[in-house]
Image: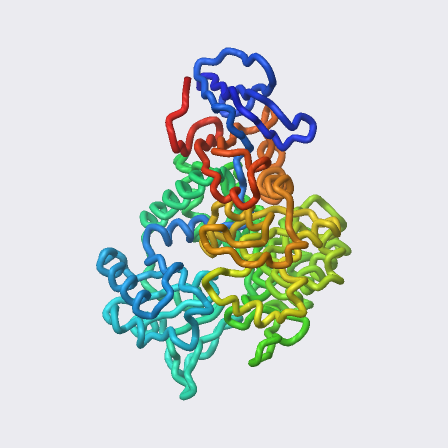
Length: 537
């Protein structure tokens, strides 16, 4: 590969030893040199036009394969606000995707739809003859039509699977709505997408990620299916970003079984482009279906609460065994009881095995008790999704009603976490929200919706982050969370030439304009994987 020179650039390397440069020389997919002043010669040159150049961003909690497959196969329901609109979208999609073995939809919004108005009978009005599955925006709820219920073997007397719930009406009849682990349990019994369709989805997801400057990800729900698709792409050189995988551990696992399965997965996929390095736990669900585990009852009128999905003893045993086998622990926590249970498990693992640079992570951290912030700083990385830390301009936020105004200061309390000394990285949880890092960074800095969405008062404005902290969270800190900080996350000689050229300087523009930033060029291993315009001298 001939040398490539990027010059006339404002390069922020995110390397504290050498934070700024004006040119970057790339050789054989790696950074050969960085400097200021007169650049060296090279066979190929890119004039950056004085624009900002950054390391490629890394999203450390993104469902890349399933999100890309949604783009390729599912009706997009994220912006649907009415029953008629939902049915029209689903009917049109069913006609357009007649070749698929089932009709999929993604992104209906809790707060507008849910147990009270989404049923099999409703979906049957437009698609009665093919199985239908439509997921909510969090992917923790899904509604099936009657054909899908029948194929899955779900009847009125079907018992709930572990950590799952089959919604029933007042007469005890299954409505079609499923919560949590009932969803994969049911979907496994339906017709499956082909590997070719999944690979099409991966291509769509990668292109979408590359267009937003993303050159590395952590997929936090790896099963044999995801591992097989990523491995196929890695083997054929089809990956345009690096993938780290967190293998799913369920309530049915024993420590022995979990360590054996994950060890085999790690051995089969050692990287560097696809590697399995961590264990994924769902410690609770989400507020939107009342499965978030909290230390106190919900504050809205129905009240109630939910248990953690792993018992205290089981959590300690699984975490300790996997930590001893040198897996990172990656835990979904929404409620403060789930966060505490996960921290207790990590503390037990450390007491048994001693500390090591694991980059264990608690992700989401929607509600965190202040007494646990110091423990978070000593035990785990805060893997956070700042886009949620705002008052939504269009969709009612039923989670805030359940948390209650008295606990809002402990909701997405990111500044408090960092001030307590917590390590951090930023991520999107796409397709639950946008994967656009600049929209996410703007929200982290303003705690408000974008101007184009309609302004609202900032949500807990004392919890904002700085632009510098956000970019670190998408580069150096994210690379550490993905176990590839030794060769990515910084622009430094010897590191992989993963970098982006953007349309404006996000360190200097108005905070409310950050989301308008466009990625003009993305390089992965020194080769373009996205270009919004032609570059070159």
